[in-house]
Image (cartoon, rainbow, N blue to C red; front, side):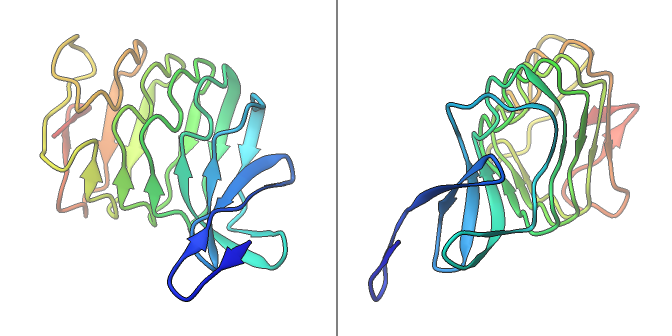
Length: 173
């Protein structure tokens, strides 16, 4: 890890089989890996490499992991970037913690195993910044593709205290 006065050069490392990339002197993101993760994954809130790092984001890390069945995201994560879980066809359960403020475009596209999703009150951005409604029962109107091709997704629930999004009869607005 090379640190200068204002710049950090990203360093990749693996911790307990998951790839991380330094994003600052004290934080890391879960990064894409050529390893295809399978089964139930629990992301820790901190990892240790040369020191302790807080895990604050997920960036495309689990894209195309067709054997991934569930993921537990720690309360330290604030951002789920674009394509993070795209085409995880076996993913049936995802717990999005109340620390997440942003979910990027196509984050869950192609996750045909998902039947329901709960959006916590902390989420202020889904897809791109402009709000677009998404009805999982129709083939058009995807919210920036966030749940595109999620054929079995029938319900999206939003925390009643979320002031940016709402859901009515399982439809995200």
